Amino acid sequence: MIMKHLNKKWTLTLSLCCLICLAYAQDGNSGINAATQQVRSYFQSGVNLMYAIGAIVGLIGAVKVFNKWNSGEPDTGKVAAAWFGSCVFLVIVATVLTSFFG
Image (cartoon, rainbow, N blue to C red; front, side, top):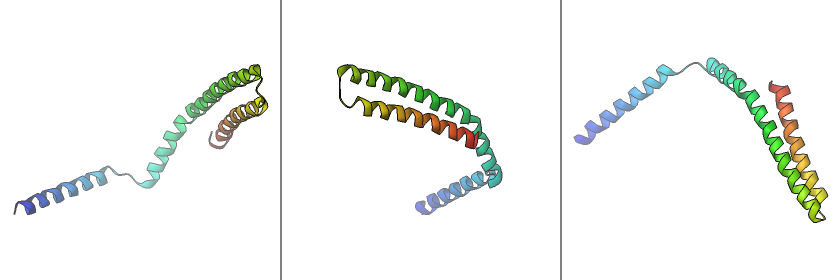
């Protein structure tokens, strides 16, 4: 008897929660438009963040390459190319994203 009563309460509570969610729901088109506007508002900040990360990675890479070069390690050229390539890739990605979505 008690289980039936509790089961009815849970069913009623779940039904009310579903109705509340449906009341706050919006149609798909306005939801997609709202999400697009929100992403566009953060886009330039994200691109600036990518440029800042590229600058930091470039500075760290320059210090590592300089240390390898001063110590006379033979693979300095490969390490320099790898760090330089990663920085260039990050800048190119930020530029391409800006041209596509900016």
